[in-house]
Amino acid sequence: MLNRKEEPVFALPTGLSLLNKSDITLKNGIAVHLIKGGTQEVTKIDFVFPAGVVQSSKALVASFTNVLMQEGTKSYSAFDVAEKMDYYGAYLGQSTNYHHAQITLYALTKYLPQVLPVLEEILKCPSFNQHEFDVHLAKKKQDHQVESEKVKTLAFRKTQEVLFGTGHIYGRVAKRNHYDEIQLADIKEFHKKQYASNLCTILIAGQPGDEIESLLNTHFGGNDWSNSTVENQDLPQINSHKDSFHLVEKENAMQSAIRISRTCVTKEHEDYHGLLVLNTLLGGYFGSRLMNNLREEKGLTYGISSYLVSYLKKGVLGIATEVVAEKRDLAVKEVFVEMKKLREELVGEEEMSRVKNYMLGDLMRNLDGPFSISDAYRGLLGFDLDIDYYKKFEQAIKDITPKDILGLANKYLLEKDFYVVIAGK
Image (cartoon, rainbow, N blue to C red; front, side, top):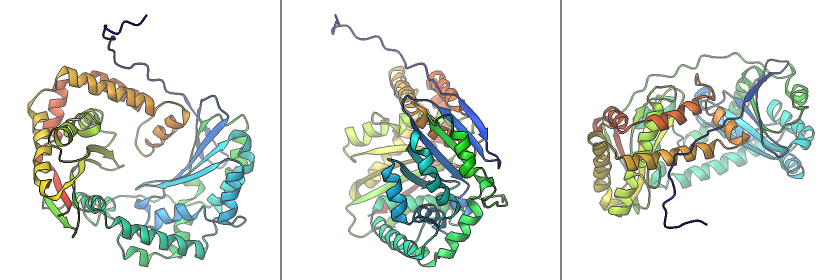
């Protein structure tokens, strides 16, 4: 019987297991990466294109294009597309970031022959109907107006501009006038240029069946796609603001949103894995130092978190929270107090073990199953990295020492390197 008076033996999680990836090349040269696994006859397919914000000359064009592709084709109306997917229990999703855009299909494997023809038309010949464009534009205008009333949104937008400069693509944020400038012709031109067969990458996960290569060649392996010239996407030089403090005033705001951030390294850098551990200690989980200080001890905020984001060309290390206006200065002060402690004091073994345990468990959870591994692999596209990156991350978590953390903190948590942006009062 279980003796509840005895403390269970503690051990770090072990045994990260990654499903193998196999590669296929379609007849027209499209690269297909296949991750087979799972027990259910379900398939997830990602079509990824270099069709993000970086590739668009005007704001909003990339995201509008990706959404409107599903709002009707030469043979299907927007209603027909939705009805077809619902009938076969399939789901279509989309997303756009700075460097890539993707359309994702989830479907029962047995119904791939029925739903792939619809997806083929979505990718190759969307109708880009004026009515659907006008409806989407009106909705996004309203969304932008609503978001512009939120202090956390204002703080994020200002932070991007401060860190990268308004002339840099990472610092370009949507403004009201952009919604008046975008035209349907911009959408059509962007689709023709960026959603071309020679720019496409396909990721497949699950149990797609033995006919998957034949199905993909039938619908996506021909030469009826457009081809596009691959352009060199050199980004302009980062032009961070000369001032370290910025206030975006918002009348009648109940709270002030705080962003404390700096530019940082990307996933390819040798310090990145260690920085992820440092970030977790600082504010990356519920038991972090920032949560204990600002929430549990001082009651300044309901929640505070730190984050490490890696875009293709640059990363961001930051802290985000919301506090009542009269407590904002104290909150900023305490954030820098916690950074100073990490620069001057070795992390205790108990805290170090707790964070390692949390991170290893989180890593295994995020890489559990073919769909999750496919998402993880997609996150490496554009970097000179393969799926073994996550095994190296696992080992880095296990090997990192308090002394390593101290060195990283003295390199990346210097107060002078951070910008403080406050939106509200």
